[in-house]
Image (cartoon, rainbow, N blue to C red; front, side):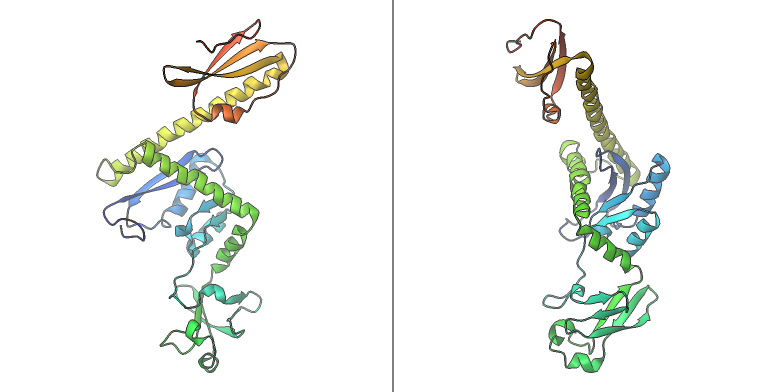
Length: 305
């Protein structure tokens, strides 16, 4: 694998798809390190839809997936892409493609000198070429930053599916688009971090793609078990709290320390008045063990347990 800001060597890539609501890993696919991130993504989406019979509405991806065929494939599947923007390659000191404004109605580009670049032809790869007149470019004051040393006029290439990329860029500027993309780093990036730091997935313990796939699948299964157990416990506590409205039960959370271990202990008490709610997320999200004691009479102190 040879990538920017990555070590060189023999690696495998773990391609994961994660649910944004509960951070459940829905798909794991292992490829060699020289496979691009954008190659397996469309097939993995189809597999998830067929396996779980679900239809996602949004799909958050990083800048490595910002290619025109990926945008086209995602939109054809009735999914809204939320992909990070990646700047086009350019030389230092030269104008980027963002300096040129595209007019959708007239199908032309407007250069920084307010001159139109007119469509000329379409290549076999699907790129439309827009050119400016040589006489105008040679006398332009922006020539040094716009046209290369050997070129005599400016040429801009635009893919026939680039409208989808522009729509994604505009959606990323909205509050909803920003929220969806920010949620991505809280789910899939956190999933990879937990796998490496807590479950030993930083290094491949076997050779061969099939054996490495087993390691990645087992790691994902363990992570999902922990997530599902957490959600089920939250659901259990949710219904316990709802009983307060039916049986008029008062709940007292209490923290006790025993043998260098910290536990959360709750005490139920039958009372005639309703008590104020406690913060359920702050109570549970610390990952402590939870015990419940049902008491019929009055509250008893358990600090000396």
